[in-house]
Image (cartoon, rainbow, N blue to C red; front, side):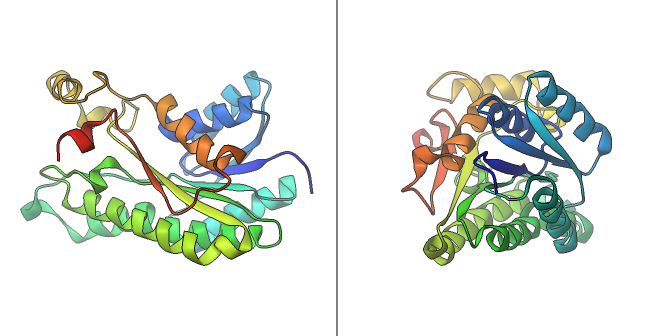
Length: 248
């Protein structure tokens, strides 16, 4: 076992996950970068290493229980331990209710919901002797929905419930479980769902007067993952510039 904090971030090949990996690496942590696509992992790995950080590539499909367990075991084999699990992987489609298809629901559930169950399970097993922290990525959509987001909002609401339940069960083992709930932030993955008019509307209705960034979300994840939040568990933090609470 090492004194260095070891973190596995799923969906870390781009967007919020990559920003989180880079921020954790800047803090001196060892980061395991997971994505399904090898080219995304390689790119993120190179960026972390260019900073002088230590990173472990983890190319796995975390949409399955076996894939999540394989990812965790790879990290433990490489680093000897797992201290932080960030369940960040997701696959998103926005559809009107009449257009929703079973295959869309199944894939969104598999990657955005079931993978978090398996991530919590595998991380809890890895952390049972020394404690640790688990951070799940929910969404502001769990609190403030919009048209065409029935499946997405439902899944992200479920993530907040998983977080509370896991926190209650795992606290006695020294494992804290929290979630972040970001509003829409510009990333490669959200680009196809954004346009200038929609961005302008979001800025106009956000009390802080701007869109969030991946770095905003990464800082919140690192707060939950680090010692600053040692007495915090079962919480979901909105990182949305105030848009949810000011527009209820």
